[in-house]
Image (cartoon, rainbow, N blue to C red; front, side, top):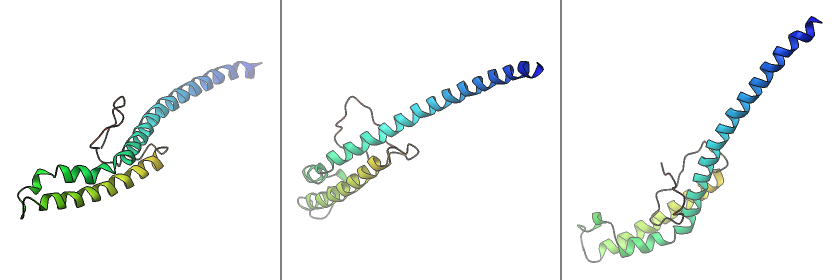
Length: 126
């Protein structure tokens, strides 16, 4: 008879531990899901906008290029090559962000975009 009375507190403790564990997993899962969605959105945005980098850098070269030798032509040429390299970087990091979005421990790898396609979702870049 005593063994039946001793099992009830253990069952209550077991339920309590199960509830606390379930809540912990739920909170961790919500955080992981948010971070995963953040990486997915950053990756999609990077892949969708990478073709515009060479064009944007050619049309509006960075201000640092204005003092270069041959000021009228050189910033446009250097801006095009800088934009091309930036587009390669943006596309490759976009692919990695999409590939790693289920693994929420990875930070967002994509650089901040020139154009944001998801105005309704604020993507956090690190």
